[in-house]
Image (cartoon, rainbow, N blue to C red):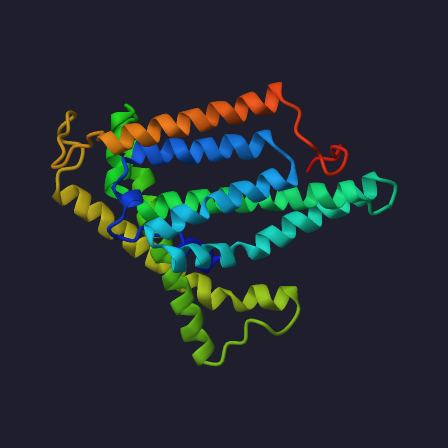
Length: 265
């Protein structure tokens, strides 16, 4: 989990993907989300995952991207297992190709969303994201809360890992014992985590007060987002691909490896 959160922290690099407008990258993430929801075919889900590999290579975030992918493996296995068990029970305690195909499809759908959101947050700074949300006329309080969470949650995950390592060096064994004992052993980890979280929130509140947060309703920004030719080109391409995905889903019958699954989880 900590490794997955660290894979969503912005990395400042020079690439075409980093220079794109956050609104364009946000539309791309929404387009991938819509396509992943519309389709259940295994090969479509696999195609959606593979199509994002070139973007990751262009952005130069291969290591961070793989780190978030490795961190989500446990959740992917959980989704596959739950869907497999549900399909097995629904099919009369029989393991069918349809059940396997559907379980794999749902797992790939989860990985598709993780990959697309990872690319977005790894290449979009919280400042640019906040400016983009303001351009969409979202209240600044919500923009500030959202961007602050994006900024501090990965840092909190790193601090939790540091606390765990420190407690292990003092002889705390988190992997041994039953479930109840393991939960109790995490108390020495949770208490410092909560204390540090409260300290961080107080520091943030003091910094906001020092900068007269909320004193003026109309805010100005040092930088302004401006759409460039590359942004408009990417915008047109993403819109066309999204329209094509919707059209193919509702007006074209795709070949199916197995009959469509009836079980849903």
